[in-house]
Image (cartoon, rainbow, N blue to C red):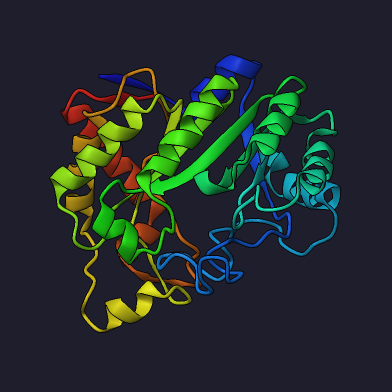
Length: 297
């Protein structure tokens, strides 16, 4: 099996290496503003999974410049994707979205736009806006599905049924928008077969890309309390890699692999601590993939 990674796909598309610049649009989430709840998904940190965004550092353009300054020594070609990562980045009136997203794609060094959001925050007028922006520069929509198992979705307080994901994917595909779907490996109460079914479902949905990530326990996420109480277990590295390989075997080979693991902010990470050694983890994953004749290049 041979998969293409995000890095190689972007190099093929743009002719050079492309880095993501994480920025914060000042959004919230229906799981936090009282629409669906106040505490967010159980695994989500207080920064809305945007630990690496520039945060409240000024305007979108100022944030992009700051983020570019951090990675520019590694990126001599100077092409980037503006990445709205924190919270739900289509959860606002469409006129505000147009202002923020248009500003983000305005610099010449920005090659495209990536927007993390929820399937239940993609009304037709927002998809119409994203379609217009996609005619200017490529737009990727990242959807946080995490699991297709109903009981797990309730536990993590996802806040929408699987049918909402299906509907959003159908409308995004009809609009010609590129989609990336997130899933978490190691959620409480899930077997390896459950996780493989989620991977297969994402693949069958027509998603263009997938982000696979292990469950992290962060000290400012609600799941931390269940972990401390012994109600939640985390995977050992070999367990994670075995399940990851099983999930990859369920995917279409044309789907782009955006992530094979994850590295939560070390200042917040409680478990699994092995995940903090990113270089060792990635080297071990690559070695095990090769042993199973799986290539992710």
